[in-house]
Image (cartoon, rainbow, N blue to C red; front, top):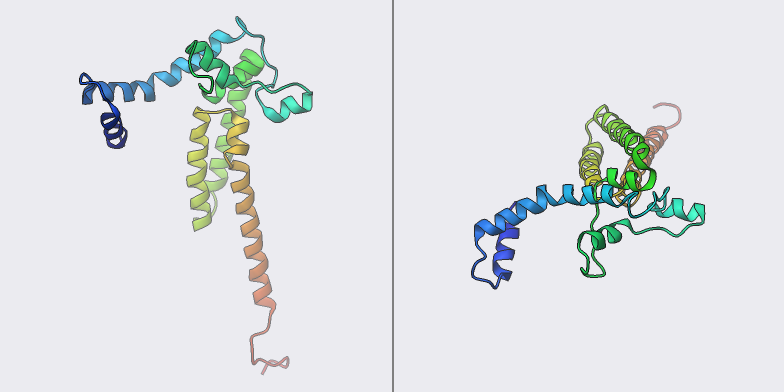
Length: 196
């Protein structure tokens, strides 16, 4: 897992003091420390620098409220790295977005809601017959819910494809049941109505 980024970084490094060890430390910091630092910065920003957003980080909620949506990850990047590139982004785990929108109540209720959704999908998929469709859906959901560590929950559910995969699975199964019934009711070729 670490060999490819390590090889790319070694190939791109032009300084002599860049070693395998310094690159491994940088990769480990990126994987284990930086996400926590970004999430912590969300708690520093609100409400000290900005008021809570009351749903403005969620595009459709902002649209329904008639408010402009707020790019929280871009603002957080500029807060963490002042003078950084304009297109920088510092997304945090779903809990940071809940805090930015609704404060500590959002953290508690949003965390509970996220847990209920993830566990419900897990139970639904595990209790189903083990088919290619259910196993592929489970694998996709595993990856999609992991993405909640990097994005807001609505983005994970909608843009991440969770609802679409579950809906597609239900539609495929309904089509399979319909076609199965249709095939069973059609008489076999060469069989007469009299049963001979």
